[in-house]
Length: 162
Image (cartoon, rainbow, N blue to C red; front, side):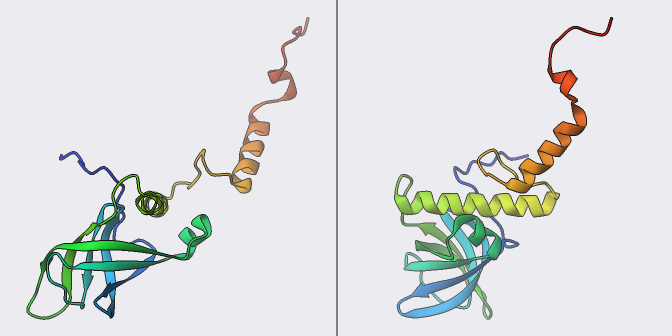
């Protein structure tokens, strides 16, 4: 088993994201194969040469939009390489032009982390709860579970029955 050497989280094509590429005044929809704050792999009908700069625009799905209050994000990218079939869409490997520490990079990392967390929850059926996220329904469920496990006397020390 190969260890993942990447420094950032990645999300795959099953995420709730719609994307488009912008290059030299042209716009074309694209499919995100994977996305991280550091880059992306996308498939599109738009033709771009290696080293070309482009913008990857991503419209967020409703679940991420609700969690982040953001509807659309843009990534300034550079084409690293491509797979050009004789016909049909081109697969591009893109590198983000913004680096770690920049506001844009950090915002992208948070977005990708949120999307990855939601995708994992869909796959596993696990609760999306996190200690960093406040969720009233989750807290209410915990209160009910705690009431069922403990009685008032079990939480208070005192003399036992004699």
